[in-house]
Image (cartoon, rainbow, N blue to C red; front, side, top):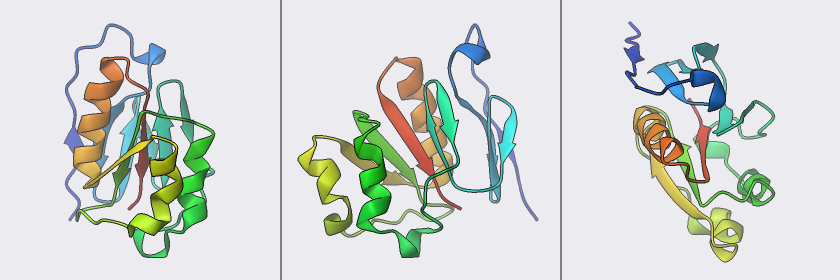
Length: 128
């Protein structure tokens, strides 16, 4: 049984910024659009071209993808369980001054919304 959570936010115009509007075990919703696969969300765009498939198979290249985006912080949603990648995998981010925070997918969605609303350069990378 999948339980879905709907996030309640008070933004004036959802079309101006990409935010999470819901999540469940098997999907997330961004501005009310459902995504069933890994995604990368930042203020003005949702990408589905990130090569990562799941947490166990993350590689250095999966993290290097974010070097061109240059967020202040990357929130990695690791599914229902909080998991931490080996530091060697995200060394390029650290060297570039990009922070990485690993958390459950629901926590990543909530944290992203708060930081995006504060106009921070935040990116959420969501895995299921």
